[in-house]
Image (cartoon, rainbow, N blue to C red; front, side, top):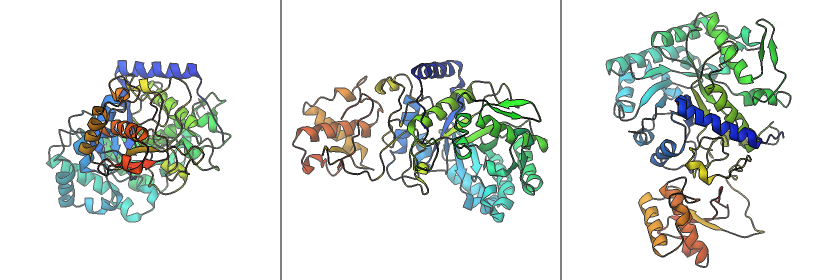
Length: 463
């Protein structure tokens, strides 16, 4: 497996670049996909507060219209994109259903929650489901009509994300074309709708899935010899640029090269199977760090110079219930306890103080069912998944009231961030457990505590 450690000088440079983004107002180009296929994620209101207060991420894309999440992002000012699941597309072609969908999933939350986009399905064309594909554009049109009726159309765009599988050809980039049959009958009306409603074309490019050991440097934005497009004479040193320009070329063939392109998903896993190339936390940090710098730099691509791209990194959290290879469960920037899997400058300076000042990313999250560490035999006490936050706060008050050292979870303490009740309770409950004989009953806390043999320490925060 290839490994790439980020030099300290590069790490410092990247932090400086992120600081420049914040100063220039460009941070709005970086968003995150908030997936929830897991049984150990923190409550949405904690996630919303964490993103707002502790990270530079200020756009969120959801794979549904989860009401608890939509409520959580109220009054944060964070733009939110919601999704109509694929299986609802045929019904969405009926105006009555589309209007009811808007009444149930949009109107109750806006304007308190800044819903800016509704996506109709995800990667619909590459499902090969003729019913979904045939109804995709009519569903988008009907949903837009429902938003017009609700006077929300000027605030909320309608689009749909595509995989690169919509292209029949992508190499060299100048020859990019949409798949025959879909190009005229689906893509052209879809692009016409996007132009008419001033909405973006959304694509999910993943250099991770397109690279090999020979093209890893090309995929990771590392220095490389590049790939020449003989038709244009343009040299590509980034696989992402080549993928985006292939999409641009396909749109240009149909006469829609004026549309905005949004990167709806892209990312790199921090753990994977032994057969996968370049899968570890260091490489994931390198890809996502370079990605953020590249899409926000204004350099654009060879065919689309001087552009920034609204980009959504996949994903916010590692999701332990996702099926498929190990990598599918390890695309997250953060663990479920909201500690970073690796540090790429996403945490704000105040939040980053708890992360070690060195170039090596924090190790990836342990496996879902780790092997007991019998050699050391150490155990820790942490809050159970889903434990009531009010009880957890009482646990904090109880432990700290007994005189235990709670300085690490106070402002500027090593364990203050993430600034959440659950994270602070984890530290306090474990402090009590470690000092009282380590009996199972010492980790009960009104049935909100559980013993684990996985060390929850991170950065300078030691348990």
